[in-house]
Amino acid sequence: MLTLQDESGRLGHGEASPLPGYSIETLEQCETALNQTVTSSLSLSDSPAEALATLSELPELQGLPSAQCCLEMAYLDLFSQRPEAAQLGADSTLWGPLLSPPASVPIAVAALLENASVEACLSSAERALATGVTTFKLKLGTDLELELAQLGALRAAFGSRVKIRVDANQSFTSPLAQTFAVLEPFGLEFIEEPSFVSLLAESLLDAATEGGVRIPIALDESLRTLDESNVGIWLKNAWIQVLVLKPMSLGLWRCIRWAQLAEACGAKCVVSHLFSGPIATAWEQRLARSLGSRDLAQGLHYAPQPSRS
View (tube, rainbow, N blue to C red):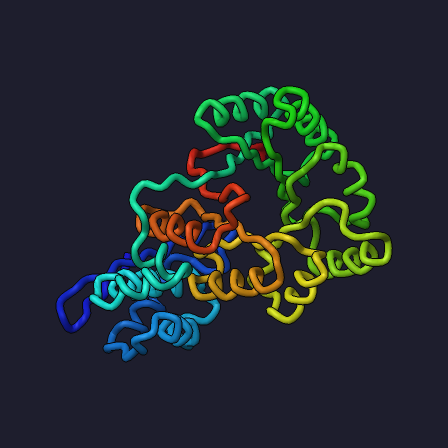
């Protein structure tokens, strides 16, 4: 956790929560970088956008998005306490939910289902549905035969009452048209990260000549390395329809930049998490209200869901 103090004595808090096995940085690296960054005073613009842009370019934080996100949270926490923040929030659909979040406004969320067996999958879906969750997410890429059985069981049990999205974690290695043909009957909301970027790019070009992408595609971890120009082309051509924004994986400012690009191209955004602590969780909720598309459930369901290894 990081605490910043301004000249008026106000305190702003941030949190770095890299996820082992997923994040590109460690907690120790974040701590070292943040200590180097805040040993002296920071001079920042009165504009939060300009200040976040400056923080995103700090050399000590390059390649450490969790540390960058931590510092950005602490800065925005401080800024939100300044008198001018209220007016800025009132005038902006972006800054309003970030600086002056509405109290207890519910956000629709998607539940990650258990995938050890068909029975476990259905049981976790029933538990989620009992709490009001009507969007389910299923991980793919380990045992496609079992995963297809789970998708079939979900549709048979719940029909059109629920939405189903899947995440392949870049596991598909065959041409996507073949895999999508198998998945198409299940009426998926979208598929996250179907393959590595190189194969995905080839498949998108093929789809463009064959009538378009058959199942909406979302990018998640690819956003860590892709540049805006390439993604912009895919979004404008509707080859990619959804961006999944994880603040701890990208940083707050990069999440905002990706969301602005998506909006300009008519695409949608989902805000998700890396099982963060309470400070980051609160900011993820704020980002979801500010950047998340209203017709998509956000990836902020925090109940732990075990899955097969």
